[in-house]
Length: 87
Image 1 (cartoon, rainbow, N blue to C red):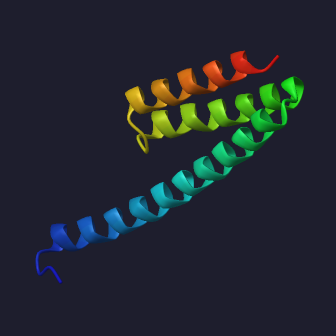
Image 2: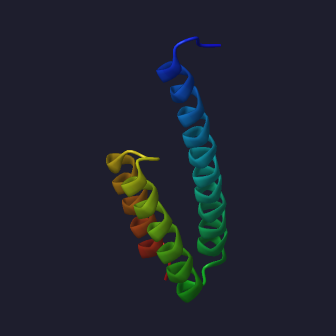
């Protein structure tokens, strides 16, 4: 446990940020699984809706700093590629 006041504050701030980031990443994983399931079913309209929700969540995570901007870009490209495979 830190003794210096600024270090104590850092511990509190990092705990809050870790909790927030963990929740965001968990939600992203849930959206990714839903998207993958819809793509596997072959329903184009539902896949586009799920892709839009997943893309929006990725953008928000990138803006907040939870995910790196290149990771967000890569995942969005994967979504687009998966949508193009559906007939």
